[in-house]
Amino acid sequence: MAQAKAPNYSPEQTAQIVEQYQAGVTVEQIAQTMGRTVRSIVAKLSREKVYIAKEYKTKTGETPVKKDVTADFIGAALKLSENDIESLTKANKSALRAIEAFIRNSAN
View (cartoon, rainbow, N blue to C red):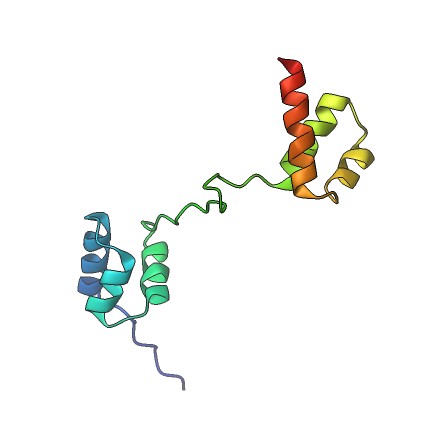
């Protein structure tokens, strides 16, 4: 007969982690004070539905745009077929961005 698994965090620990996180304490600091890994704290905060993931930024500090979105914009602007738009997604991202910028500038 299998034994019941002991919870990793007590209700008091969970409340403390959530309270600290919502008060602005970093996940790294919480992990250090609790003697846990950062991944463990992030996982617990995620299960408690309070964790806010850091927004990824490119090297230039911009929010990344997927090639699909750029290809869809170009395809719509040029009235391309779905197959042609799909083939655009295989192109180099910087080339797609240049075409997108050209179309946007031409519209002005």
